[in-house]
Length: 73
Image 1: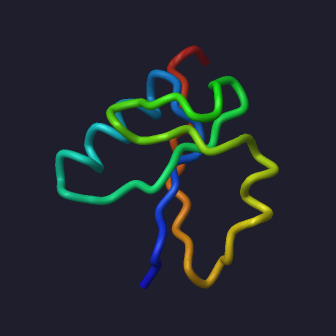
Image 2: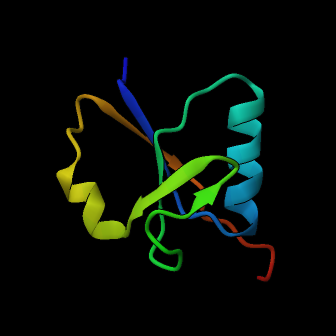
């Protein structure tokens, strides 16, 4: 079981995913998104970095949640 959970991308779809995770009682430790300012909060969850942040995580202790999505195409 993972010790930490991070959301990758927090645009429109990512915010829906984050809201659903939080509403179902899941803990999200941070958001990884190159377009958002590190330290800003979305639904109380901090933006922790861009894609390079992923390299610092222990894959045995981390769960990554895909927040990428689009309805454009």
